[in-house]
Length: 413
Ligand code: ADP
Image (cartoon, rainbow, N blue to C red; front, side, top):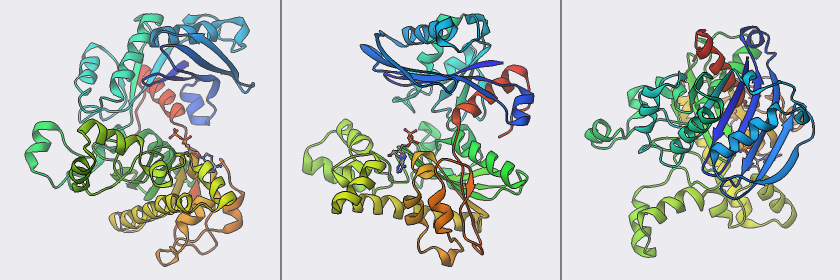
């Protein structure tokens, strides 16, 4: 089944075309036919198109909105020139959408119908920065492909539905939860769920036996405590702002700081929100960049003190969460690194795991140094806790869930 996976943002659209079905899932033999993205939608857009494993084709074109972006992508996908070779638009069998927020209602991937769309719209309040774009992506796909092509929503929050109340509730007046849904929802669920599934496959463990800590370290970053195969706690909260230090997000802070800064700097709520989400984290502390690779290069080349400080803050926060989740889970069998930083940076993995031998976590330095973006085990002989690198693949899980929903197969969590 040809599944178009869409991830629609405010001015960008990422896509993949994946061929999958039950046999392909069982054999881990899904085929990625094409991928790419459209950036700067609304003006002269930059379009990157990749057929199979060929070199990226980067071009520009005026793209006024998401519908125009979907139209452009489909025209390319079905053209002879693309080399994707799927024939006509009729060969797109279903569309899977990444949806950031599923609230309390959506605990698993769901076929999009009018009722579901209304449900998604009612969540705009909770995720104003993301969900409206995700829903616009559905409208665009329907406008271009028609109503006969099923569309499926796959939620970043769904995997965290299993959080117990004591983990998802904030110690605020309880009526704020009842009235306004103020609670931890958690995000990156598709990534944590995918890496947990790969861990099980690689180690031959059952879902019930899976007791691990997954660390998704990318531009956004989050940790997840998984026990009995289920998410039992996660570091992102009511929004993706809480928890780890991220590229431009602060992660955990004392909420009382906000009033203090508002008064001292004369900032309004919007400006505070923007400061926390867009000007903090690695960028805010270093004053240089939100990009970990650039920070590491700066540190190596110039010894910049604040570059080191930002990296140290990042690693120390991850270490604290590992400690917390080892306590929450009463120990773990493995720690799994994923996301752009977790998959590619041996030095960050080493800095995180240094000095954790009392907890039973010991990296093998040369194994760790050799791993970049491949599924590998990197702990030392005798380490009580295994350490893995498992590259995430959210699009693949979205495609598989879309096939499962459309074909009525069981949906594993
Ligand atoms: P997103 O959350 O946007 O999907 P990614 O998961 O792609 O982001 O992660 C992007 C981050 O990964 C950036 O900070 C980038 O610098 C970092 N990164 C990628 N490769 C490396 C590397 N080899 N060493 C250190 N950091 C890296």
